[in-house]
Length: 283
Image (cartoon, rainbow, N blue to C red; front, side):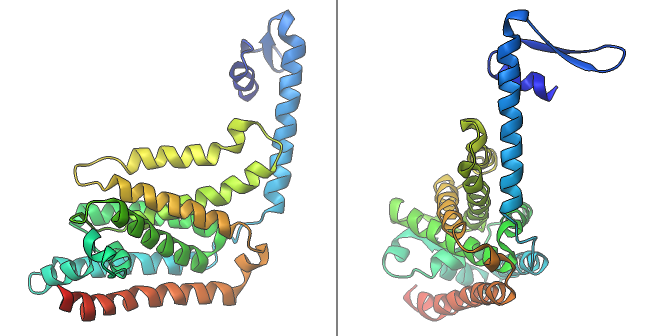
């Protein structure tokens, strides 16, 4: 069936049947030579892709459990504080991404907004897809580096969104970082694919897949900030592309993963300290 799909994709009509001993792919007599050439080229592409995957090791998910746990606890706890009846509105106002205030210098809002959510369904959606995409990115880069790049990509995405939106625009939610993680995973899968002598469709299939996921899960709903999702995805693509040039050994290096994880863990509370001390006063 795989061979048949390969032939149909290049315009050679084929169908599959079975005789007493084996499966057969049948084509018209005039197409036999071309079919053999196409299948030989496809098999060579598969071998090249396999060799490239073997020469481009993944980090194997080092520190992924801790990263996902920190992600879940951070956005759940902060969101619940924002929902509290006593100080919730003030807390949320101090941390959401307000385009005018971000442009005015309150850049910490690009980070704090990632930890706030409008309601439980909003939070649950980001927990599910965030966990999935962070795991994908972490399989390539390790938990610590993936966490730091996801956070930075999300913050940059929020910053770009604030610059291109109207000054009155506000947003909150981890989804910008969630799609940043998707962009990182796509970029890491994309670079080794481009380095191999494969078909154009196969080379760009990670980017196509990422774009499909973005369109499916990042553009629906009345309150969806599509621009923030796109800027987060693009920021993640750039971050992942740059990370793909780093030595492979870094992905397995415990000190590198630890420094990255600690950096991510410091950025979030640091941003919230600025939000509550400076943003709260300015508000």
